[in-house]
Length: 102
Length: 434
Image (cartoon, rainbow over all chains, first blue to last red; front, side):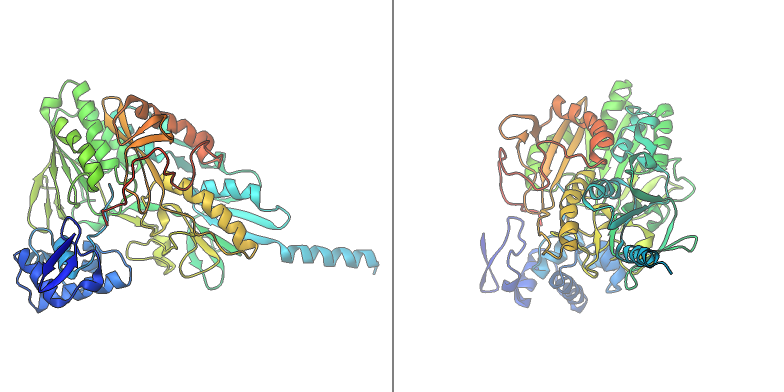
């Protein structure tokens, strides 16, 4: 489905994840973050950069991966993206929700 | 010197030179199946097949789910591994020290080296409870259990036999795990077990998952979520465990959510074999980066991997290893003949899900298709129903143990079940959960 954010039309899935990463830009990221009640800071962007890089390299994302990356410790990750940090961060980053089973 | 003798010597050494080696690491479900497939395909005059595994026992791992509930006995889930290695395959029971992929060699613990022309990695996945603080502490197998090992499942059986009730917490540490639906099945079977013992009212069952729900794909959630409410199982979602506080009987996550337990049945972090890390061939979780369609490893063209040892985005399940083995056998033959590999593996998985009370579900899915409703294996006929509870599915799951020991690991094709997913008789929609 289509959605208008930051003066642009983007396609999202029913949960609000971008279905086409090429439509993403920083302004769209900021708007999605606002919808999640998050005000973006440099620390937030460092995580988003990491997530987008992993996505481009086609590497799966996990809490473990973030822990090992040294980008941030997990407690702080939860503080930055309260609730579901990986789910919220991937949505803001414009990449698909991390994979799960059934 | 006699001329014929000279001829004899040269021809013999020539023969030794052209004799090639295929080495399989791991004699679990995947490795044993490959040995059985390849022994019939590779000409004995040209290829020597060797399989290496340090363990003498072959476990029927799906049976670990039933052991705690006294549905299976210990004898039903284990047999001697050598029984399933075919004649004509060299079986080495020794720990593997290192893979040296650049030298095409495998170093064994006692110092022997095996040279290979083709290597197949089937070293599986293991639980790593030491990854979470407090999990493998003094309460391990006393009030904190796993059921992914024979020892864990057996300890849990003994505990359940005497338990008088309380809080039972079934928990997944992190994904990916072997047989992703097993924890849920465990919760369903626990409900049934305590009902039959006449003490269900004394047991609170909580299912704790790092995912957004017990079922995470939209179709499965819609069709199956009622099972949790019907069985009075409480769900705690998005729980990323930080530590087990075994002194105060609770698990705590990074958001400081606490879940108290009397018995914790956890599925610890699953990791590939330490051998893979030692050899510098794995990802963060020691899984081998592998091409998801051909099963050739990403870094070495003469090394292939299958089963739980790979990093494929498919389920870590015996059915997946089974489908992979059929496709990999063909690709090994193609590789030997210098033909392009078939990009055929589609992530096909086929799993029975025990729902308790003598019923089960059956799901069939792949990389791109969600589990769907329909019938299996015969379109429109069944007899097994996809994504619906039935007694027939439960009988199917129990019958599968016989199929496993007598057909599957021996590499005998199971009639009507194809390696890639059939779209007939199923109600399809592309997979949404990515």
